Length: 91
Image (cartoon, rainbow, N blue to C red; front, side):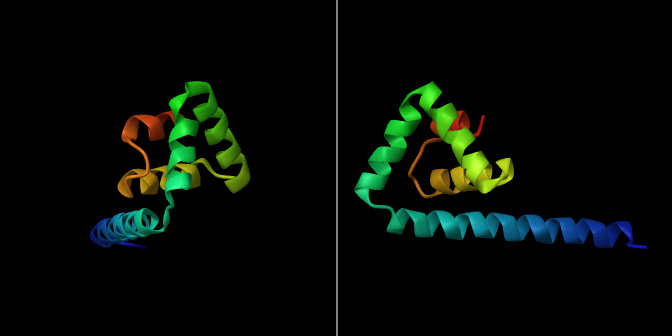
């Protein structure tokens, strides 16, 4: 049986790794993304309908809504999208 203290420490360690991962992916995305890629992402997120379709396709391809959320969080961290546009894609 796992103690409550050990469970809390495991959860905090997992969250720490998650946030470090998002920060690293976002930083690397910012340096790797070309201007053409940035324009396409912005254009896809301008229209709410296109954003929803883009999010649905991304969720379908990755087979996970969590993965789509992680990718959009990385895009926001990397400066490719603002939060409002990323939220329409995730929703």
